[in-house]
Length: 326
Ligand SMILES: [Zn+2]
Picture 1 (cartoon, rainbow, N blue to C red):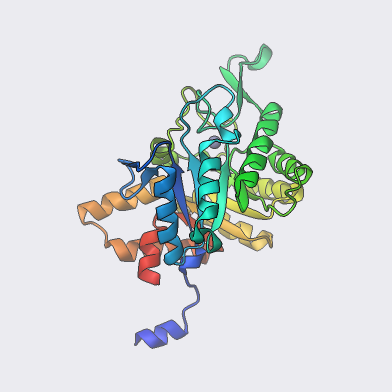
Picture 2: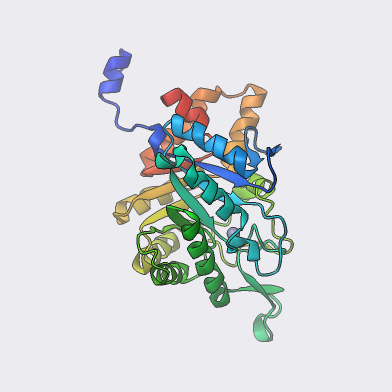
């Protein structure tokens, strides 16, 4: 059954298609800006006009959609740049919506505060609790006040043209808060793609350079999940779906393929997996050394994620893979 390519193609169980791929873009201020991210070959911070060009190329290649992150002009404690009407992602969404590419792409906006807060955390930061826990906490991310800011961000992005909003913060109750706010703003048709299980991972390292979002103190382990916990991931997914998530996103992908598979067997909503920056960068490091065949390793990494059960994949390889697959 493996003797010829037509025979292998006939019995192939899993396929990766350009339309399964979501391409992340990092939008920065300015015009004609294309700043390379040193730890992620082929990835750039792009001004809005350059992002529109990238979108046109992505649409031509048949890529499924874009996931937008923002690098604001300035940051503050409350992450104002995330929800301002003329925030950097909102500007990009308006420009993209006017481009013909937008008709072929799903425009997904990342909903979080960490790219916009001066401290780099995903929510409102308060000083450490008093009392018995004081030894363990130097600070807390305050869940409930954060929800209002996330909801405001999602509404502002949807008004600017986001087809889908994707909360990545891991606060409790954010999906319900965002759904309620969208409905109240007459944005009932805007779906929510929730990062339902996002593990605290070393593989996010290069992203923090790309999005300039490294925490200035502490880490994110008090709100992102412990990588050891599969059952807890299922609980997070159930909660997000109950709260109104239309799709879920799992992150990272390759070190957590068993979690993707478990989710696929448990729920019926569409599932995406995010092949995160560190997964991309480590493969590129091996390509540069000549240790791995670039095209084969890239496609195999994507195939593995699809085979684990992901319907779509957020990946920095989207353009390169689409060129090979198209
Ligand atoms: Zn965040």
